[in-house]
Amino acid sequence: MKFVLNGSLIIGTMDGANVEIAEEVGPENMFVFGALVDEIDGLRNQMRSTEPSQYFPPELNEVFATIDSGAFGARDELVDLTYTIRNRNDFYLLGADFKSYLEQ
Image 1 (cartoon, rainbow, N blue to C red):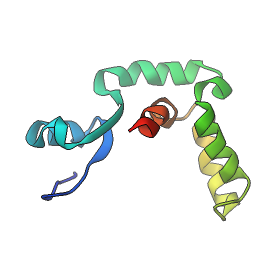
Image 2 (cartoon, one colour; image 1 turned 90 degrees about the horizontal axis):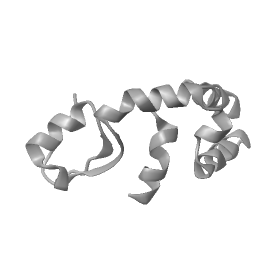
Image 3 (cartoon, rainbow, N blue to C red; image 1 turned 60 degrees about the vertical axis):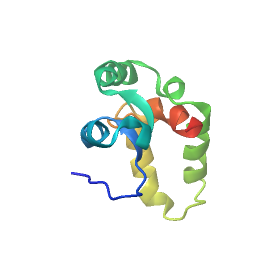
C-alpha cells in the first residue's frame, strides 16, 4: 500500500491504491496519466489482439530500441523484460499509458 506525506508528489495511473489516495487528497494533488480503472480490461484485450508493432507508440518503440542497443548496460538482462512486454504480455499497460505519461 502507498502512503502520502505532506509535500510528496504522486505520479501514476488511476488504479489500485492511487484511487483511494485520490479520494483522500483530491485528484488535483496528483499527476495522473493513462487509463482509468474501468478502461483496463478493454485495453488488455486490445493489447492481446493487436499486432505488437502497432500496439506501442513510436516513442516507446524508440525506448525499446535504445534498451536493445545496450545504452543502459546489462542488455541481456533487460532484453528478457522488454521481450515479455513486447509480446502481448503488457499486463501493466505500459504501451497504452506511455503517450499520456509523456504529455504529463
